[in-house]
Length: 305
Image 1: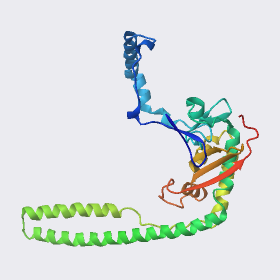
Image 2 (image 1 turned 90 degrees about the horizontal axis):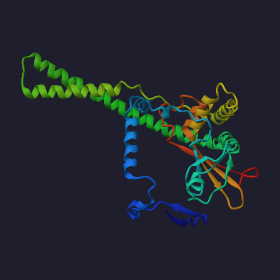
Image 3 (image 1 turned 60 degrees about the vertical axis):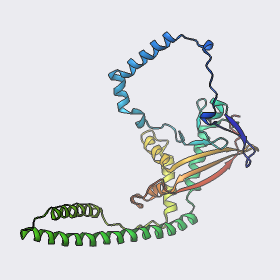
């Protein structure tokens, strides 16, 4: 590792050196087992790994379907080193690089419940203020309708090309019906028919529809997040509510200031938030394509230092 001071914050930040700069030295006298036992153990591991039971477990890829049990699992990052947060005890979270690797100076632990409450407040109150949402709706609608206009023009061009293709094919069919047979004619016919099939496949998609966002989108969003937040207390629907709220969050960065204050920087996927407030409003727009950021400071009076 190498350590440098961040000129903006004055904090020491660790970075991994390039692998080609590493110096590796064999120290066989420090072995705790001999080569024979090592090879026996590796052979046994290979046998277990190749067993039908283990192969079946791996094929199921069960880890991809495991639902998160906490709101911020995998979403929290350290503002000092950029590393992820991990559990330290039952109810606390802290920078994994600081606690496990010792490569970060931010060692403070934070109550999970306190962080979750602050993030829910940010989601509800700070990410979609009415003025900003109104400006976004105006700009987004103009841009999307511009794209829709371009898509409509492209669709018209494809329709004209398809009509031209049909006219050419009709001429070739007439020539063949009159007895004209040449290798070049057959190749030309096959090329045109292939192109025609591609055009028809492109035109099978529905024509683009105009985008209309609700003028009171900000209030709809706040009500939806408030409802989801209250649903976390209901065991029957907690899992579903948790997944929906997590989908609104891209990442949360925890900045521990020198004066003892803590600042949370929340990055949310704006289009996912709009979809939550007005389902179907954005059609096929990528939910991760636009992000917004909100931050709030709070006194860490109950945090473990």
